[in-house]
Length: 358
Image (cartoon, rainbow, N blue to C red; front, side):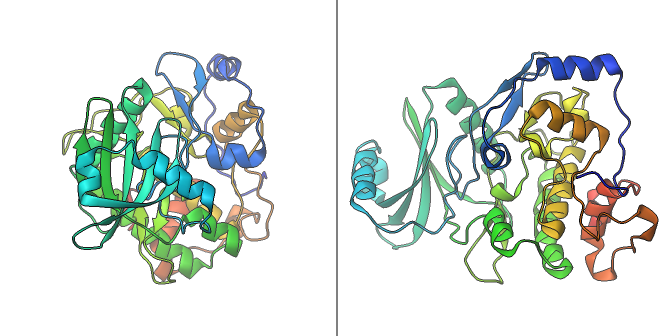
């Protein structure tokens, strides 16, 4: 998807890029596997390695589970059997307070169920994480560090937590509108007005997180949920399993290389210390997807994918974003946030801060 409007990022020294490519494991899945389900997590000093498959959360299960915010599939006996099976795994303190209704997500070491508060009949989502596994424990700790600190209209809310020796049960608000990813698939692409509305809500949530010293590090359409199915629904940011949480005002650099391949910023790939700007890069990718209906960086082979990102080589060939940079009009006044994110990163303009984008 290369085009003349691409911002060509300065390439790292050849030996760095060659070393990166040599250490990348090939991935044999399909293109949709790469786009929607594959998470790459890299040790800051070790070789790239495959992580767990992951999708977003409503409460979102740990890596490997689908979104809890989705509308449930039609009822069927096998699903009811699974609900009964996992109900038995829940701590009596949980089942005494919440009636388990349906299994709506599962992962490598987590299960998510839709529940109803027995007294108020209010629906919630409960994520049950098997913390006896190291990966589950680490992701759970990361999420709790963030969710216990935040309260914002555009961020998933933690209601309460139950803990046992081997499991943690996180009660969270239930988003029923599905993923932004699903609406992109259904619509193909968004109008500038609709894309701006989505990005404005996400930017509001991200600005709040950054002010608290929290970097999400895995922003993507699968981790952005609609609170309800209506067209006027707000957007909720979910899945903080890879988030970095520091003290408020702490601007220390991060080093851990993690994220979803198509959304990873170049500085992360070359293992340079990075800042909150990696979230802005991911928002730029999301803005690009909203407007074009395609991925700016996409390849079944991760080696080639990372080369595209490092070189700023896009695969989109549509009429609007494929025009020469000098022919692209400036963003309209109503889409300053969209222009700041999308044009700032992908059309070669000066990088804007989050506040400038807003």
